[in-house]
Each structure stands twice: as C-alpha cells, then as structure tokens.
Picture 1 (cartoon, helix red, strand yellow):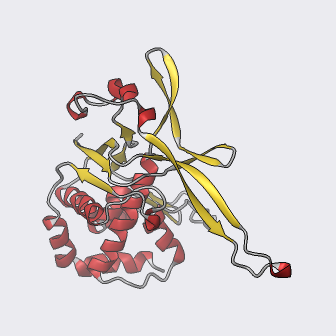
Picture 2: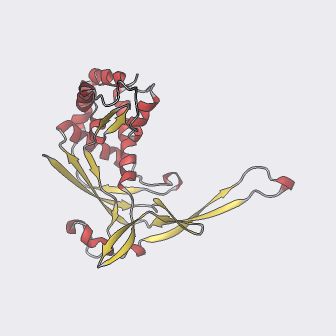
Length: 270
C-alpha cells in the first residue's frame, strides 16, 4: 500500500476569516477545535480541511473541463458531483445496490481529478485518494501536534495571532418618509497577516498521472492563492510553500487521451 505525504506551510498575506457557529453578541468567531494542551482542553482556532479540499476541488475541476474542452455539462447532478462531491441518490428498485464496475474502472482510468478527489453520482460512489488535514496555526499551544521541522524557532501563542475587524452593509431600499438608509456594522474574528499554518496532504495508492494531477491542483492554487471567506474583499490571500510533482504528465494525458475522456464524460452526462 503506497502513501505519498506532502507537507506545506501556508502563510497568511492578508487577514483570514473562517467562521464557525459560535457568536458573542454581534461578533462572529473563527472556527475552533478542542485540543488537549498541557493537560487542559483548549479551543484553538483552525481552518478546516474541508474548506481547503472544497476550494482545491473547484479549481481543479474547472481547469479539467477547460483543458479537455468539455464546456457544457447538461446534467445538473453531474456538475454538482464534479464540483461539490455530489450526494448518493436512491434510484429505481432495479438499480439499487447495483454498481457499474466497468464505469468505475473508466472513471479511475480516464478522469484523474475524480479518481483523486472522489465523488458520488446517481448510485455510484468513487472514493477519493487524497486526504487533507486541517490548516493548523503554528503556535505555542500546538507545538506537540506539529512536525518539529516545520515549526519556527519561537512560536507565539495562537491568541496573539488573532484580531477583530469589521464590515458594513447598507440597506439601499428607499425608506418611508425620506429617511436615510440603515447602515449595519458587523464584527468578525480573523487570523492576522503573517500567521503561518501547517497543512498535510496524503495520497493513497495513486498512479503517476494522479500524482501529476495533484501537482496541477497545487499549481492552480498558487495561481489563485486564497482560502476561506471574503477573498473578494481583500482577505484570504496566502503563500503556499512546499514541493509537489510536476503537472506535465497529467496535462499531456488530458491532451493525448481526450477522445476517451470525452466518451466517459458523455456516458456520465446523460
């Protein structure tokens, strides 16, 4: 069983907000996870691996359909499965529990992004080969959870890496009696620029094309280096540091096997 491990340092170049469910008054806090730190349970702000995986999936799938020229997906559920992972549907009684093994083989062979990330489509499930960790801040509280080689010489407390910022919304509708529109202020917690996160991605039993596909995914992330929310408002910009495989083999595969890839896409897109 082959496992390839890739480790990254992700540095915040602007404030980063990844909200959780918890609020204190009008303030939205960062998502938190409980860690045992020196015998005490602490709520440590993190960025979830699901947020990382979801953003990388959208980048890779958009590039995939562009590279092969398959720019019109007619089946909404196929689009949802490619770009969001999909949901398992209940089909007709005659189809329930029936797995099309030949179709699964074709997906594995000719759709490297799907094989890498997985999806659920109709009553078929393809398990992804890529496992993504949470983005953990390199901080004093998490030194025992992070590889020593990736830790800076001195690690600040995570609470020194946090700040609050605010935004505003204005109700532009015409108010009764000529009153001025209502402007609302909201506050939210962020990681400060300069915060460094550790990210680990494991590839399970991938072939060379799938590993090269992974390299292309990180390449796309470096071209659009954002994470979490509010990137359209100047937040979430990051720098990604870490070695990955070359994307050349994957891009050559898409070009050389385009006809077979289209056949599989058309079979799915019914």
